[in-house]
Amino acid sequence: MVYAVVRAGGRQEKVEVGSIITVDRLSAEAKKSVTLAPVLYVDGDTVTHDKKELAKITVSAEVIEDLRGPKIVIQKYKNKTGYKARQGFRADLTKLKVTGITKK
Image 1 (tube, helix red, strand yellow):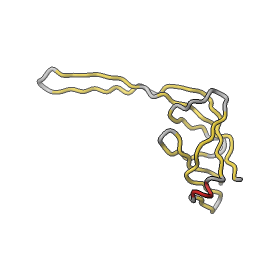
Image 2 (cartoon, one colour):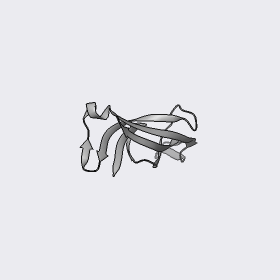
Image 3 (tube, one colour):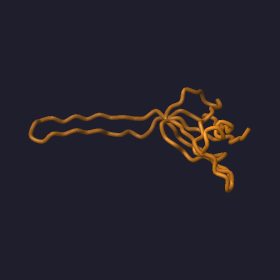
Image 4 (cartoon, one colour):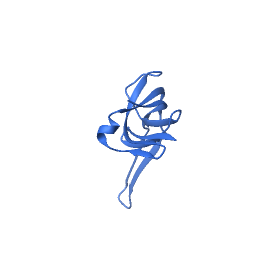
């Protein structure tokens, strides 16, 4: 079993070839290829986390689409003062499909 843990959009995701992940918005167009930075690489019983060895590993992914996350409603309220505030937020996301994990 070959998989890698990659750093993408401020988080770490475990990926295999063919897996689809959602990360924070990347500045890449649809159907374009992007490279993700590996943090950990597992090939059977071999676990690689050394920085020099990880530099030899390439995790490539294809951009499927840009989308927006679910709406998060933020409400603030202070009792007996008449203060209440409401705010909404939707994250800009990118959906990726991992196309290859290669070792040089």
